[in-house]
Image 1 (cartoon, helix red, strand yellow):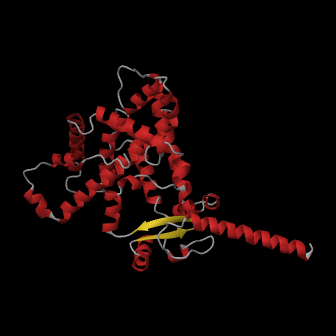
Image 2: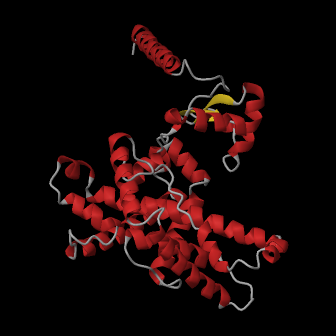
Image 3: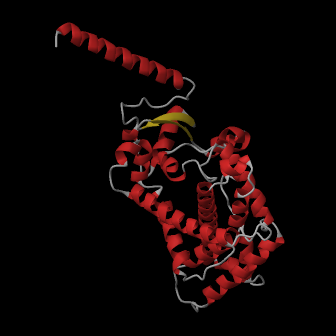
Length: 344
């Protein structure tokens, strides 16, 4: 290749690089200040992916409580400190109601459901979910009766250990899951039922995995990291198992569906499919149903059971609280069982 051709190639490459950088600067011109990123890795060299909040707090000392940072190819804005986060979520709620795009959520949800949905699909699913949950008693005395019954089952299970040490995560998770299951599926599971144990194991594995290094790397470099084994692959496998269970449930319910006697949220969704309206085809399809049920199950179970277990821990560490509350029966724990549906 002659020198003139080589020179032309170099000029073209430099021109393309300059154009790309100019466009990038234009795209991020309104971003707050932050550390200058390195090619390809961004500012990953400055972050401990196991404890990124430490690095963020340190950077906030230099750049302020609102700064930008690039991790891999992803540019993001970081908010640090109670006052800054409170101001964003309370005073600018409209701007911050959305969820960020991640490669992991795109791969699993594909924009369906409610937790990681966007735009009109999110609005329709949110409206349907709130309306249906209210119809089945959320915020009313009818759901309180179900919680009461489940609280009694939980108390009997606690008593069965007769004061001996035991691991409480499984039974508390199962008790909370049964409240959600009663609305979603119209049923409940015994605490030792293999099905509920399997579902809880899957959910707990995925929640733990979402904080792992491999998941963070996958979100930054999905095509590259997707070729390797790791916790992200386990999340994908667990997700498929969960969706297979939900598909099996609504396939069975579809065979016994009675439009005039809708037993649970899945029945209401299936009835919507048969209305024949444009909305039914666009939004009330099986993929949305599977993801919606999964979202509600995960969000409702993990948040509430964690709250209950923290409550138990605090009472154990502070026995004087129990002595002051002797007149209150353990059944009063039912009032702690609340639904924490994120992004509704």
